[in-house]
Length: 144
Image (cartoon, rainbow, N blue to C red):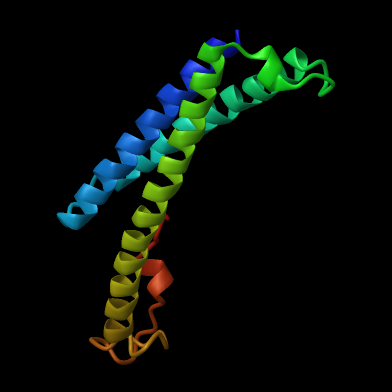
């Protein structure tokens, strides 16, 4: 049973990594139209991953008889290999997410600068229509 859970988790992690790499490519190309769809897919995958991770934890706990046995003795070589692959994929996802976060912050900083230019450094005064008060929040919403 643990083999199936680990395979599922590794597949989900592969999908998350691929989506994040694609997002980085899209951001670099200035194509932001697919961000919402990608975020929705990632959210669903993260929920699936959370459920599978709970199943893995429960299975490992049951195999070790509530922690009384060492997992190294219980797991066979294939399980250990899948567990090592799981750990490697998690580290890869962490690394790629850090890179993705850098790009998101760059875009956010750009948009913040643009808003400050348009709205008199964030005071809410619309530079084009001096008497009208407009807040940047009413115009843009950033999902990170």
